[in-house]
Image (cartoon, rainbow, N blue to C red; front, side, top):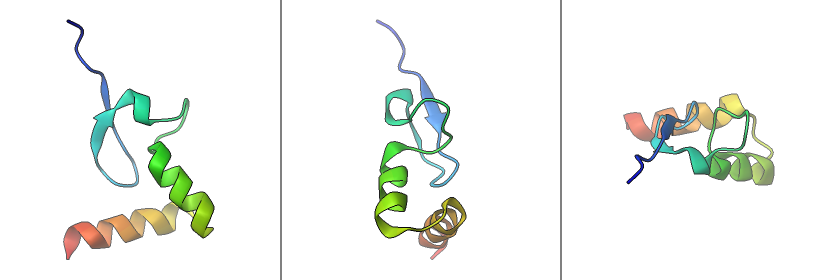
Length: 55
């Protein structure tokens, strides 16, 4: 049985399957969807997830 390949998201810091990433992107699809819907930048999203993890 093949081992599942994983990557780390630059924005959330989560380790997840490669299938959850778009090709040539360093963040997961869910983050990209949130970013598009809210109009936030990748830096703003990163700061939000960092604050959630800290507090």
